[in-house]
Each structure stands twice: as C-alpha cells, then as structure tokens.
Amino acid sequence: MARVRPHLDRTPIVEAVIDLRLEPSADSSVESIGTLIHSIEGYEHQGPIVHMETKLSIEEAEAKSSTESRRLGARLQSSDGKHVLLLQEAGYTLSRLSPYVSWDQLVAEARKQWRHFADTVKPQSITRVATRFINRLELPMQPGEDFSEYLVKPPEVPDELPQAVAGFSQRVVLVNRELNARANVIQSLQEGFPSSDKVPVVVDIDVYSMVDMSPDNEDAWDLLAGLREFKNAVFYAHLTEKTVALYE
Image 1 (cartoon, rainbow, N blue to C red):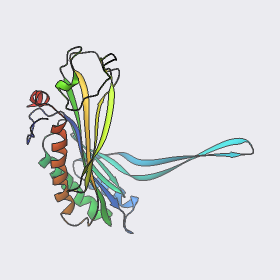
Image 2: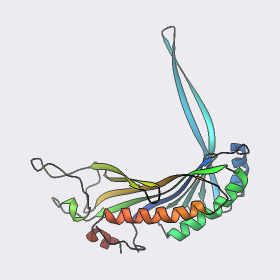
Image 3: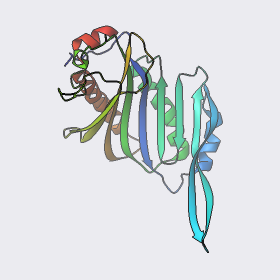
C-alpha cells in the first residue's frame, strides 16, 4: 500500500461528490425548490429531476401499460461547468467535476449552496451523510505486465488460465465502526478500452454514514471531514507507491 498524502498535484479525480440524504418536513415541497433555482448565483437551471414509473397490466388477455412521472427536484450547473447541483426534497448533492481543486474548496461551495437550500426547503433532518470520489487511473502498463505492480488487490486469475485481462469489476464494502460508516469500493477496467500505452482503471470510493442530524448544526460537516479521512485511507491502501508516484 502507498503512504497517505494530503494532496496530489496531478490528481486522478474526475468527480468528487458531497451528498446529504434528507427527511422532508411538512413545509418541504418541490414548489419551494422551484422558487430557489433562479436565485442561486453562478448556477443555471438544467432541467427537472423526474421519477418515471411504468405499470403493466393484463386485462382480458390484452396487455396494457401506463407511465406516471413525478417531479422530484432540479438539476443546476455552474456557469463555468465545474459544479453540478442536484436539489430535491429528499436530497442535496454537489459534484465537482475535473479538474478537482481541493477538499476545502469543495466543502466551501457545498456549504454555501446548502444554506440557500436549507433555508428555503426546510428539511426536517439529515439521514445520510456521504462523500464519493471517482478516480480514473491511466496506468502505463506493458503487454503481459501484472496489475499487482499498480494495484494492491488486483484481479486474480487461476494460474492454469491465460493471464491477459481485458476487463474486470470488483466491489467490496468496508465497515468503519469508529465512524459508524461504510465504504463502497469499486475497482474496474471496462472491456473494450481503446488500445494505447495507458490502461484506464477506475477506483470509485463512496463513503457514507446513516445518521439522524439536525440540518441547522455543524454535525454533518464535522462527520464529512472524518469520512474524507476514511476515503483517503481506503484510496491509498488500494494503490502501490509506483501508482501514486505517477500523480505527484
């Protein structure tokens, strides 16, 4: 495993997310989100978030279907294209797209827009706190080179079989009892990737904790700091020093 660094100059992060799941209050409504979207400075409304449900029934040997849609919230994007904001009665999500700058910048933007959202939508409580980081590694692997040069837990193929790997996906869920948190960790290589001198491996880490917190205090943001440290430990534990050196 690699040593934990506070920051990588050439970070492989392609998306970083702060996500809060919410329990709506009696005052919450999709309409209140509608009044909010045009007052958030620096963001443009990209369209609604819609839940679609199709029902299939059979009447007198004839199949019939019907589709119902329900508006859940709104999707906004910053004018520079670097942030995506999802606003719903039951959720608040901010994504930072590439190039990622820093955790402090991500949290500052999330807190700024959260205040507008919480004051308008008035959720009853926060039920889940999460942060997710999607990393795209470009590994300079040679034909026949072992993934273990770069990944601490690479895919394993029985010795009796051909060792060339064209794609893989492996998922593990880790438990951190101290934080009462879990981490969904996915390592993947998509089959059919373009032939080149770089092999694209995605390391997707989603760290979350189920909670019951007031939206008006600092508890969720304090917890996020701890979840981010857990995420960092998970990330570096999955990589070798040879991999991390590519991004310093």
